[in-house]
Image (cartoon, rainbow, N blue to C red; front, side):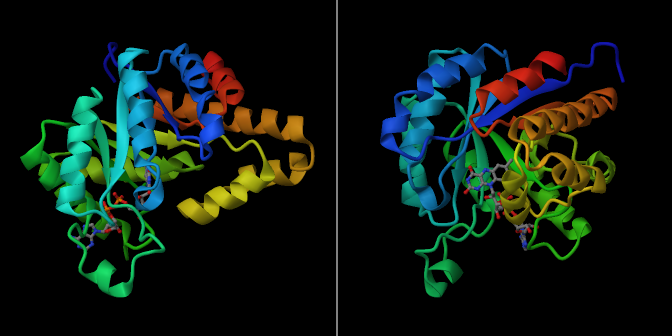
Amino acid sequence: MSQNHKTHLSLEVFPPKKDEEFDNVYQLLREFGHLNPDFISCTYGAGGSRAGKTIEITSFIQKELNIDAIAHITCVGSTKEDLAKNCTALKDAGVSRVLALRGDRPQWMSDEQFNNREFYYATDLVRYLKEHSDLYISGACYPEKHFEAPTLEEDLRHLKEKVDAGVSSLISQMFFDNNYFYRFLDKARAMDINVPIHAGIMPITTAKQLGTTVSLSGSSVPKELADIIATYGEDKEDMRKAGIDYAVRQIRDLKEHGVDGIHIYSMNKIKTTTEICSII
Ligand code: FAD
């Protein structure tokens, strides 16, 4: 690792689900801004719901906080026309970076719609964006493989196609065992996937959150984390502290290994995120 190596720090936020919660989001974003992240990304509701909110939030981050903002966009339920409108809206809002995702099949999509969709994979979206915009494009990657991929090797082959189509950096799915990330990194580099890869870290601060997270992400849970839940799960504050401590140890180890970036899935929790950022 060179002496000049810097591990970047980035945060992920989501648009509040209810309109009445939206008024407070700008104060929250200001507080996240005080943590000096290299960029903040904002998620996109499955199926495009509340897409406008992602643009509003990323526009605020970019223009008011002067921090690089990445708007997540998905393509599974979109037409080329929808995407053209989205690109124009991003440009008008001053947002020049996106995380280009396929997304998961929305409930409203019939089998026929799904099988005849215009964009099959994130790579198709990347190709479209490369041709029709000058956006900076990030993509997603999966240290423990994407749940649909038969093997990690096959997932990596498709990741390589996605990167070659025009992805400039990758953000990883969350993982709780750094060994999966290091193994993934070695394989990706061996396949000439040479863009920066930001390691996704989700601080687990309640027992319930771990259950939801694991069922959504498919990430495996090491014994040490399962033991933490068993020991502290019933006590709110002790569990929060133990969860922060686990995430901090994961991050410190990743930094010692010289990873390109740490991407914290903040879940809009400013107190927990601030505590973590103050000691890593
Ligand atoms: P892809 O890169 O298209 O990969 C999906 C699957 O298809 C993989 O198994 C891959 O191996 C396979 N594949 C790719 N190309 C081919 C091919 N040519 N032939 C056969 N198989 C192929 N979802 C949201 O709805 N909103 C969000 O804001 C959001 N943010 C996310 C942020 C991060 C950092 C991550 C990791 C995920 C996020 N997701 C989000 C979830 C994501 O939409 C899902 O994981 C989705 O199932 C896959 O999206 P992708 O862009 O990784 O897909």
